[in-house]
Image (cartoon, rainbow, N blue to C red):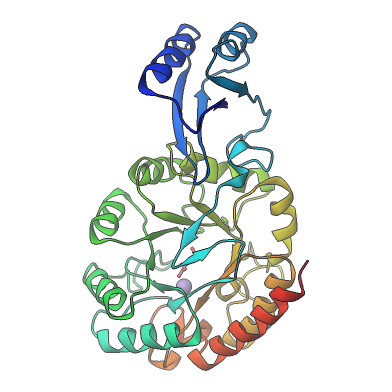
Length: 342
Ligand code: PEP
Ligand code: MN
């Protein structure tokens, strides 16, 4: 990672650096952080001569050579001062609350508009709504592109930015073209490196944010952070890590709740952690406790399935969604808990 003396390199300076790394079969990727721009060396950067020549340039402050499988997302990275912002919230400064339907019912837009308004009134800053759904059963409702219009209309009506999951390049293009500000990578695709790369490329140069769920089958935390690195290394490091439960081991919970990994993630990466209690426990009655646990563990935000009338919902909503009243209570209590953290 190359740190210039000034905030960023001039085009001529960048050419000079690029010419050096070219000789060593490496390339430069520009990563635009909120505070400073850094220049990542892509390729094998352990060439002493290459590092020395770059460090010798008068406009270079230093070259950091972090030995980490995720050198951009690493807590020691020069990007650690990067601030991720969405919905008027700077992650880490106040609790981010993302809420809304698991799945938007394209036949009942009004229901989503009502939820959207209620989420806003309850204190949510980002509206979630599933347009395309990864369903275990191929005969279950798979989502509908028509719901994208409903999602964007709800965004206009409430003024809230929106989150939706994409599963392939076509969804990604449609979502970005429509103006979706937060792209979700679901648990099933968190290990789909070609999708992660596509997202990284597509969001470079934009202020889009990515909510990266933890794969149900991910083991070591490095695997999770490296998935974020796949996205960030194309130039936009706005990635939030979302524990959402792993393979179920307990009868009663849908998945094995994993909000407890938050402090471990925070030791290794600077990325904000936004916990999804809904998919973790999988039942609305447990969501409040899981949300509070997540905040106690140090989460920067929560992503909660919420519905004005869960029984009329589709997808996970009848089982998992909480009502806006519960959401409001969680927001109030979680914000109190936040203030107790040091
Ligand atoms: C969802 O957010 O509705 C969803 C399908 O999430 P996950 O990928 O965590 O199961
Ligand atoms: Mn869901």
